[in-house]
Amino acid sequence: MDEGLQGNEKIEQAIRELQQTPSGEELAHTLTVVRRRMKVGGQFIVAVEPSRGDGKIQIQAIQTADGQQWWAAFTSFEEELKGSGSVMSTFLSYMEKLFTAALRTEGINGVIVNPWNRTLMMDKNLIQIVLGNQHS
Image (cartoon, rainbow, N blue to C red):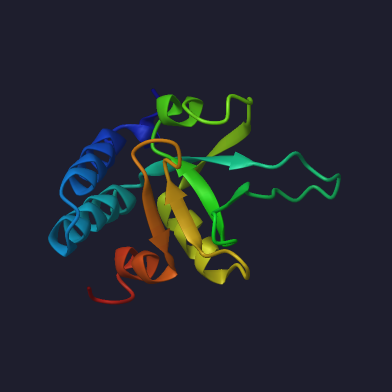
């Protein structure tokens, strides 16, 4: 297992608890767990689109039923593999870099952690809270 992913099972556990007992308290706890992982250099696996030849990396976006666009991030390779069945190009991204980029990217609503299973939809407001730009 990649070093940057070690400890991400704590995020999966927090999301599991949030799914079982959805509440503001559980959400705050889950965001705290994400922040702690971020602060120690935690990483997500991010799916990328095939290069269009311009050398720029495009993070793969997922469209939700309401038409919003989200970046997908995974806590582990097991979570990533639960998905679409298609093999994706992926890379490891520091959580903080990914969150900061999501805030600056037009047309992206936020980051969906583990879109297939232990899912946490982090809109830009929740990302600001995790980054410590706002207080919950």
